[in-house]
Amino acid sequence: MTTSLTIGVIGAGTMGNGIAQVCAAARYSVILQDLSQPALDRARQTMEASLARQLKKGTLTESQAAETLDRIQPTTELQAMADRDIVIEAIVEKLEVKAGILRKLDEICRAEAIFASNTSSISLTQLAAASRQPERVIGMHFFNPVPMMQLVEIIRALQTSDAVAETVTELTRAIGKKPYVSNDSYGFVVNRLLAPQINEAINCVYEGVATAEHIDEMMKLGTNNPMGPLALGDLIGLDVVLNIMETLYRGFDDPKYRPSPLLKQMVHAGYLGRKSGRGFAAYPPG
Image (cartoon, rainbow, N blue to C red; front, side, top):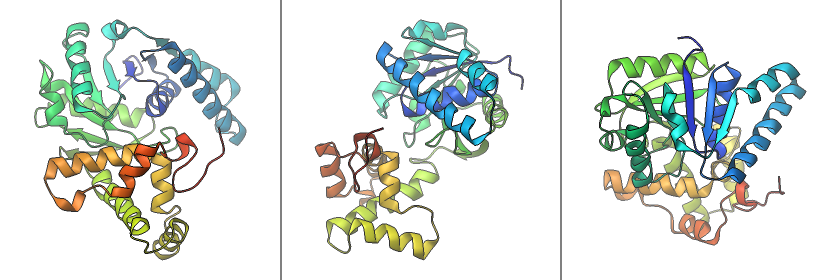
């Protein structure tokens, strides 16, 4: 694996800009695409702030931070992915939207290009079926915040080739992350275990078992976790948690994955956690 590989990232939101940053920091050429210039501008500001925090910690130099940003080319044109070796999509968590992007990439990209999805729960086998070359589709599930979190779940669709899995696993190591490969299943490993725990904590609030603050404190003290499940849900985004639970519920057809009524209400109200300033706690802007 060399840094001669070229990377494309589709979606400049929280996950997309983080993925672009870590790939560029590892000396890969990155094209970051989004539908709107304001989204790309916000991504640039987010990456600058992230790199500034690393500068303050002394984990990189000013020249390294500048070089990282210089390696990222922003664009609103999907056609810019034409010369990319690996394209990672980090767009909205909806099967039909992701499948639509794969079909467009079939028309734009070279036959040997690899398509990776940062989906947190959608079946990769279903996504791969949308491509004319399903063997080149794979999952790369990064975790938020991308620059800090070490794990990348590599999810093999039923159709994914061994060569594609090996290339993506090597790339994950090359950008300083730890790859763990799993076969396709709704929610994969981490979110299949994590999202139901957050959902059940929300049910405890909904049923009046305890306050959100007390539930988080009890879980921290009783399980030695650094963060309670409700605070973690706020960090992830309650809309993301709901998407995962709905995917698990539909995919497995099992009532144990039914989303909490309170989770639905919070999302409907726009109380999404840190990103909206309010979830199970209040958060200052910025």
